[in-house]
Image (cartoon, rainbow, N blue to C red):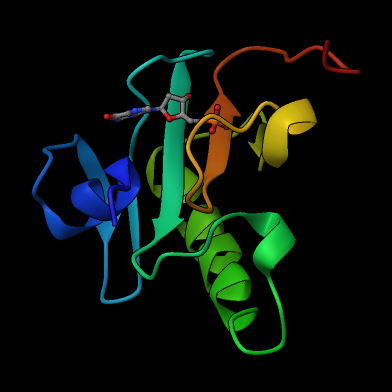
Length: 112
Ligand code: DGP
């Protein structure tokens, strides 16, 4: 499958890694939208949050647990935002489930 995040997960395409285990990878976004902007992906290919079901939902809990640990390790104390864009209207450009973690400035709400 020609999926850029599968290639990043396998190491075929390099990334600036923050955290990795057997199930997930966290790495800095190539187009940062905040002073701290990283992505967390499952290594298993899942198209997006719209494809979470009973068989694969445990990965979401694992991702959120690790985000709490990673942000603590990075010294992020003023809060952050977790975003998962879905489909065309959601602004998803890479069709492999990923969670943006944005921090380091006050973020606007609602998003544009
Ligand atoms: P989204 O638009 O929500 O699907 O987010 C995709 C993000 O992935 C976007 O912020 C840019 C980032 N991105 C795309 N290609 C690469 C890449 O090759 N390396 C890294 N580090 N990030 C990428």
